[in-house]
Length: 261
Ligand SMILES: C[S@@+](CC[C@H](N)C(=O)[O-])C[C@H]1O[C@@H](n2cnc3c(N)ncnc32)[C@H](O)[C@@H]1O
Image 1: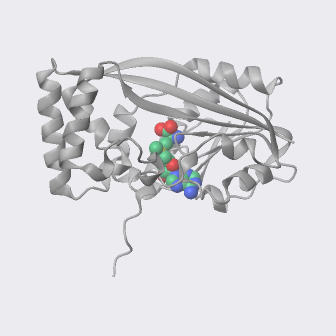
Image 2: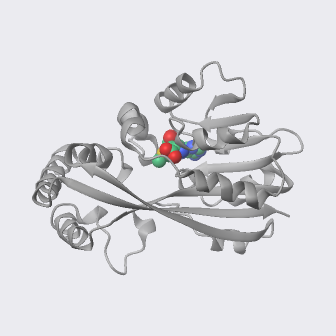
């Protein structure tokens, strides 16, 4: 019998589309990481590197970068992107199974992927991966909307056609993303100090077709039965078209930083 499809494993089904439409990260995120670390890191590991959208940013540090990525299709695209780059190496596997070098790394980063690492163990695994004084940098986008009216109409469509993935008042977001990340986890940890949270807001326009492709790369959408997903996407496309054919996605890129004691 085929193994059940797992939500954290669906990105590789659409690796090329993911790479095409998912937004990268503002350069300001790297500036904030550099300002926080205080000195240039010598060795960096990235958990859940995907096709390399966060890697491109971290590559700006100009130091050896180990990218841990379990999905073979995502990892293949990542390896292609950095083919011939001596500073970037790709390890195909889960962060939980990766062995840090003796003494630990200076920086452990994760872009839009820390919520996929076993949330009962990830803070301890991060502590084990970092040298004393090393830095954990977790970042990712909240996908909001510049147009509040469009957002409200979209919410209504979700509630009607896919309530299981709709944002509903009072329903904790972790019912959709089992390991969604909160800085409380680091603040309460015996291994980390100096916890900081930063954010950068940008607006990225998507036309209807690209917006649908973007939605098709979100794991809660990928987990919907095919027919239900098509119905939802058709209704959302009609809505976007009725609003001029463009969604202005308001991205709040959040960055959490913490220092290994
Ligand atoms: C939303 S994608 C983010 C990819 C990339 N970092 C980015 O910012 O576009 C999440 C990635 O986490 C990876 N992932 C899932 N489980 C993981 C685990 N246990 N350890 C490391 N990465 C994992 C997925 O394969 C996927 O490539």
